[in-house]
Image (spheres, rainbow over the protein chains, first blue to last red):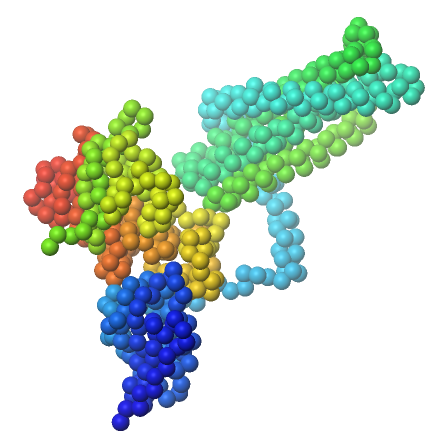
Amino acid sequence: MTTASELLAAGEAGQKLATHRVDEDCLLVVLSGRWCLDQALPSRELVERELSAVVRRLTFDATALGAWDSGLLTFLAGVLKRCSALGIEVDQDGLPRGIRRLLAMAFAVHETDVARRSGREANLLARVGTATTKLFQGAPAMLRFLGEITLSFLRLLAGRARFRASDMWLEVEQVGPRALPIVSVISFLVGLILAYLGADQLRLVGAQIFIADLVAIGMVREVGALMTGIIIAGRTGAAFAAQLGTMQVNEEIDAFRTLGISPIDFLVLPRMLALMLMVPLLTLYSGFVGMLAGLLVSVYIFDISFFEYYHETLRALELKHFWVGLSKGTVYGAMVAFAGCLRGMQCGRSAEAVGEAATSAVVTGILLITIAASVMTIVYYQLEI
Amino acid sequence: MTKEAHIEVVGLSMAYGDFVVQRDLTFKVNKGDIFVIMGGNGCGKTTLMRALTGLQRPASGTVRYDGEDFWSVAPEDQDRMKRRLGIMFQGGALWSSLTLAENVALPLTEYADLPSPRVAEIVSFKLALVGLAGFGDFYPSELSGGMKKRAGLARAMALDPDILIIDEPSSGLDPLTARRLDDLILELRDSLGATIVVISHDLASILAIGSDSIYLDADTHTMIATGNPQHALQAGDPKVRHFLNRGTA
């Protein structure tokens, strides 16, 4: 005796899915019509509801099944998983061959415990802790890199460092002449700002001629180097990190290592030298452009004569101011190259890591420049240079 | 029985500036075929793939999908046709900032209006199909080369494409892994009924899965039609036999 209880799901779903009890313990799932993701598909629950304790077997009838895609496959995969959890035997013979094979493929490899990730989200305290330890872990890496560069410089002095001079000149061109436009614009505007700032304050004591002193000494000693350093950190430091980072991604740096060529000698040294050579020169240039801006503002806005300004500038500038500016430029150049190359060499092996390396190079570069600027300003003051 | 042509290429020429890579390519890919585009390094296989998939406009000629000329229709229609193609790039080309699950889910969330639990179901099913069940939370950089390729295949299949285009499935894989990927491709063709275009210079793979093929010749910059690679090996054009015998015949 067969008590076939028929359950038609409500609405549209009924045209695609129906379940019959063909036997006391056997459930027949009838699939019909089109089963594609671009239309509403019946929910698995319609079948799962019927999987009561009595049902021991599940069979399919797909004779009226039309087109199908992943929508049907995921539906069936869900039903099958549920059945195996409940210990219900599934007879797939009623399904089209292609579906049976795809299901077999999907269930062929079981999720391994190794593969399953857990606990990606740590709590706040743990995250703060990890970030803090990471902060301090960065310091030894930085020191190691500094040591490697020092050794590389020693090899250079001993004439044993291997790199191509043409690489260095290429970097020199990139860093120097090509940075002139941006350095010019920024130095001019900074010189102009300094002149206005000075004019406003010096007018109170009737000593506007000292604009010349302020602009000349300010630009040559301090601001020229600082501005150039920051421009180069953004322009060149980021480029270094991106170049070396991409080379890290392509295993190019590993290739150097396997050949016994030090990537520090070959890649970092020329960049370092290029910046230490060009940033002081750019600093000089920046000071000159800044003074030019001060001159124009003084002559045309504040009615100071050209010769007055010229002589006051000559009187204010001593050679030691140039040495201070040049030394700062050299140090900032080294800082930017250090930060850029460090972050590039530490880069991970993905496109995202290259972006992070470039960002980090600029941040580290500017931070190092600012620290160095403060230290040097205090030291020079104490030494009365 | 004459089979239906799924892809039809007529008089296709591709060039970079004045340099013609391949000229006058004419061939048909039938429904349910595994069509192999073979040839040596630098013969223009990948350039042909780029012309087939809409990445690079050919210098002349037409590419028709089910009779519709890809390069002469409006951009919106091109986009619609592109969605029926699933493309697996040589290195997988997985987006490195996304997890595997997010990689496979992206085409689905972009083009199919599906609730997110459904998307998650489809994603885990596709990953299971290529044997990567449970790896959904991994980033591409944490996977081996073979796993990246399989993940690339899962992404290519995300939208249930009619046509799968696979660039160098076995390059960089060990023979056993390459064999498993070949089996997977055969299985997908048989069960999904999809048309598969494979670009390859891997002999074992070409002979194992190819049901039809063309050979792109790097010297004359044009193609030699060959049919089934097994037959080509026995009685095909001398150049193709030379290639398939690794230069010994």
